Length: 147
Image 1 (cartoon, rainbow, N blue to C red):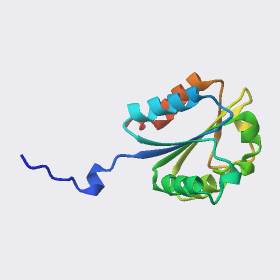
Image 2 (image 1 turned 180 degrees about the vertical axis):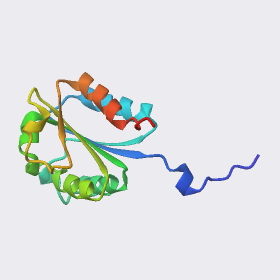
Image 3 (image 1 turned 45 degrees about the vertical axis):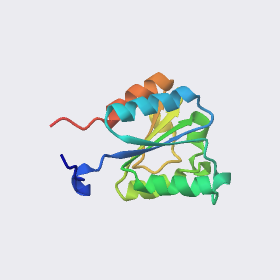
C-alpha cells in the first residue's frame, strides 16, 4: 500500500506555544504538556525566557515558534503578572491577541484574576493556586465549546 500525504489544510494539528516562568516548578511544565497532548495539540515549550535573552538564538527560535502556533499559553508568578511589560513574551502577547491568536495567561496567585491590570484588556490573566489547578483550568480553556 502506498502512503500519500494529506493536504496541509486538512492535516495540520493545532500547535501550542507554552512559556513557563523559571519561578515555577517543573510540575507546571508537566501539567501543560499533559493538557495539550491529551487534547491533540503539539506543544512547543520554553521555560525561563527573559528579556535579557532577546536577540539570542534561543529567543529568535522561540519567536518563530510562537508565531507558528495556534494558541499561546503562559504560566507565570504573581509578581511577574503584576509587572507584565518586563516579560519576554509581553509584546508578542499584545500583538497576537490583536491578530486573534488565542492567548491563555495563568498566574500562580491568590489574587483575583482582575488584579493584573498591566495586560491588554483582551488578554485576561487567570489566577490559579498551584500546578494542579493550572492543569485543570488549562484543559477547560482548551476544550472546544459545545454546540
